[in-house]
Length: 206
Image 1 (cartoon, rainbow, N blue to C red):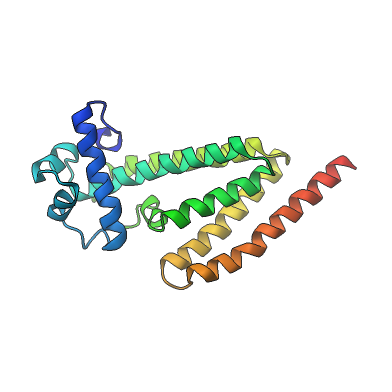
Image 2 (image 1 turned 60 degrees about the vertical axis):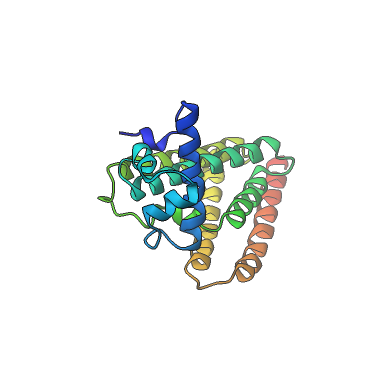
């Protein structure tokens, strides 16, 4: 059953679906998943409690899974737009867009990892993990395809940067580093990336 992970085509159900996810995004970010009740979700979304379960039969866990998929789709769309509009090395455009996305939505990193859900919290969790993985994997593939580097180098560079940035974002999320510390640490990473790409391009022209 994947229906709760997808925006409904019916206008009324779509409005309820999105209102619940909007409320969940705010509450999960400010209070946390475990501390947020279904009653609070219904109140914040201004919908009846029965409407929550009509749209998300598994309750709060289904809401979380659906929110993770929506964030992943938004993320993939933003990254695709950054790649399409890139007027500099695509790796730099992707780097900047990735940081902007997570700066604008600090809770997104944790939610995309479905970090608050166990595998048995909802029958949708496995499907949600697969959906998020496929969407983020598509971003990686698009970045590699758009790179001016050879495919092997482009993939290696993308994976290295993804791991570095995610590691620092995880430290920020867990409270081990401040946002300004992460920004300071990522600034030279971007500069080194720009230098490596320039060097690689120069070598290719030689």
